[in-house]
Image (cartoon, rainbow, N blue to C red; front, side):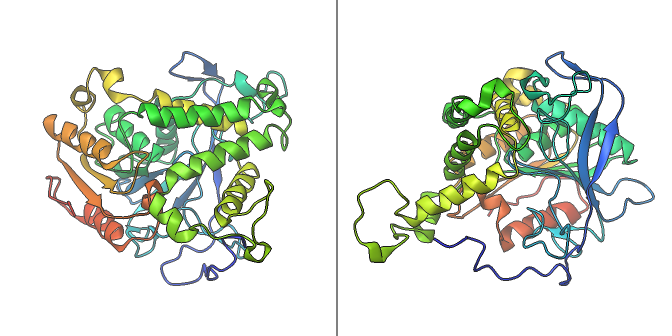
Length: 394
């Protein structure tokens, strides 16, 4: 199979509606940070990007929260040679659904990550070596609290909205719970208030693939090394959960990589879908740290709003924000009923909330892909004036 990017049209960063060149920055917090676990770091770094301009009233900010394998680079390009823009570039930019000519957009790589933010691959100042698994355990709450410090540093007085899909949706919900007076709108997509046993099981298989790789060495490995085989397998397995059977069948079916070879009797790549998954695994190990994968998947597993607050309704009791929850019909990782449950709990708690369900056969990753219906939902939710709940259902 050819490289999946080979036949894609060239991306023009100068096209109307594009942000063009953007640059990451680092927020360095020099004060001690205490994690939910009680563990303490003497300080931390968050890598982030911003697009647009903060208003004089400092209340037009939108926080974008990324998913497990995402990072701070959600829009624009870092150089004119970039083949692809940021991961949510289709949604963010001047005149787009998240309009950077109106809003000041912020996105940070999460605490525990590996793309510039403090995490297991960072250097421990006490030893001069990477932290590895001596880095404090990270929860979604720790991610939220660290990003609030970043927003304070940027001078944001309140959030117009916080938006995220998958893990980013969990982060968005927790922002509204932890900082209710600061957060005016929440848009959470393809998410859940707690993972199912099946979702936890998939994460555990990925972790075991990493930890059973001899090169993991109990988390002690050099930068650029480590359990590359295990991490690639973890990514391949996880990627299957992000797409649907229909989308995989449409894209690959049972097509052979080299049909002219006829029947072959070995374990080399035979089907195009095998080649695609191997490509996904190899691309991932070049940009992601195995220990960060362990930490972030464990944070996902431990996220459980009903358990943490007594019930979903009790969890949402402090919320002042208007919420829009979006589910996707073909998402079998965090299926529509899990998204709908969040919206219903918000309503039972007396909060202004709406639920929309988009029909798609693209699976969990539907929130990342191009969709005029999704763009219309996002734009309408962000730009309308009333804070009363309306029916966004589709």
